[in-house]
Image 1 (cartoon, rainbow, N blue to C red):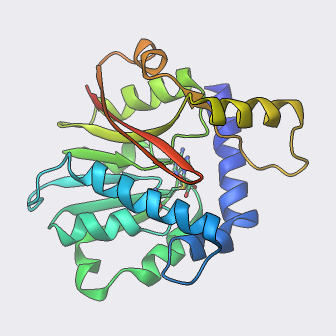
Image 2: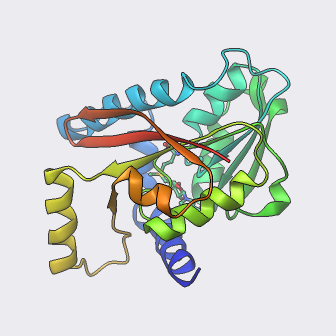
Length: 222
Ligand SMILES: C[S@@+](CC[C@H](N)C(=O)[O-])C[C@H]1O[C@@H](n2cnc3c(N)ncnc32)[C@H](O)[C@@H]1O
């Protein structure tokens, strides 16, 4: 897991320092540039796609929001009645998520700053990981799915960056001209490659492509 911790450290630094404000704004209702507006719309569509994989009524279900960020998915899950464990490696984003969560939902949500795969978070009925595995290499995603899968009864619904010509060009350019800061690089994946690194079953759920937001929803069953 050497790659995993190196990537997680970059992600931690990026979201806890360089990108905290941008992410705060993108995930709020505040006005954003037209490009970011397409990302916001794409992400709204993706969140709905992911949520469609879970029962409407989540009362009695324990759900992990893995890499919860500012907690948009967390609030949706709690609204449906789930008991949510919302984990993020960035304490700054956890603080924003805690502040934003409507008081009425607070009793159903446990926030934790730390690693999403930590066994101390317990067992789950479902796991949601929206855009939180997009920086990891396929073997790392496979082992995250296996580690979480051992403690999850139902599906792990997550997203990856698909191998489109645009995202591959972006990725290749990023490798040719690495950025001076420590920002993590998004790695496009073919679902088959991810499946070859995990022991359970992987299904394609659907792709969302809206402006600069291109993301593929997959579901893993341990
Ligand atoms: C692109 S953001 C998405 C946030 C949120 N899921 C959403 O869709 O609004 C990715 C998030 O995953 C978190 N993350 C990435 N790897 C993580 C790990 N190993 N453990 C916990 N959080 C992680 C990051 O800190 C970041 O907040």
